[in-house]
Image (spheres, one colour):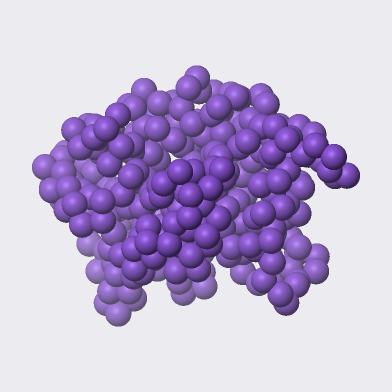
Length: 331
C-alpha cells in the first residue's frame, strides 16, 4: 500500500443541519491533511436527508479552498446524471483554481432513487452510454486542438480520471481504458477479490497510466476501546438499515446495544454489506486493516466512516492514520 486516503459523504447528524455537516467536512479535511491522508474524496448522492454532498463539485471547491496540499476529488460523480461537457467544465475550473490537486472519480449508478434520477436527467435514456461518456469526458481534458466543442476551463488540464465500481463492469472498463480503478468495498464487498483480479489481469497501458493502480475502500470506526468503537459504529449501522428499508434519514445518535434497534435479519444484511471494515481500539483496527491489506494488496486504501460526533469522527481517522502510516511502502 502506497497511500491512504479518506472518503466523506458530509453526513448530517440527527439534531444538526446541513450547515453543520458541511462545516464538519471542512474540519475533517483539514485534519486529514495534517494526518497525512493523500486524498479527500466526496461522493454524489441526491434526495438523501442524511447526506449534504449532493452538489459535489461545489463542496470539492470549498474543501480545496480550506486546505493547502491534500488532493481533493469526487468519489464519485455519477456521470449518467450529467452531460460530460458540464463535468469537464466544472472539474476543469477546479483544476485551474487548484492545480495538481483535483481528482475525478466516475460512477455509473444514479446515486439516488429512480424518481430523483428522472428529475436530475429530465430524460431517461434506455441505452447505457457510460463508456462513450467517459471517453468524451477524457477528450475534453486533453489539448482539444481543432475540436468544435471545448471545455473552457478544462482543455489541457488533464484532470486524473478514475473509474469507480461495486461490480465487475467498472473493473473491465477501467482495464480496457487504462485508467485507475477504485472499488466500493466499503458497502459492497462481495465482488472485491474478483474485480481486483479482472482489473489487474486485463489492464491495458494507456496515455493516462502505465500500469494498473487499484484503490479498495474500507469502513473505519476507531476509538480508545473496542466497546466505544462498537457503540459509535451503531450510528452507521442504523443509518444503513433505514436506507435499506426505504426510510433514509439523518445520521442517528449511537446506542449501547444496536440489536435492540435493528431486527436480526436486517442487521445481518447490514453487517455483511459493511463487512470490509475495521472497528475497535488501535490494536484491533491495526490487526483488521493489516489483514485486509495483506489479502487484497491495494495500491491505496481509502477509508470512510460516519460517526455522529464530529470530534469522535476526527479521532477515529486520527487513530487509523497512525496505523496506516506504519503500513505504507514505496513512498
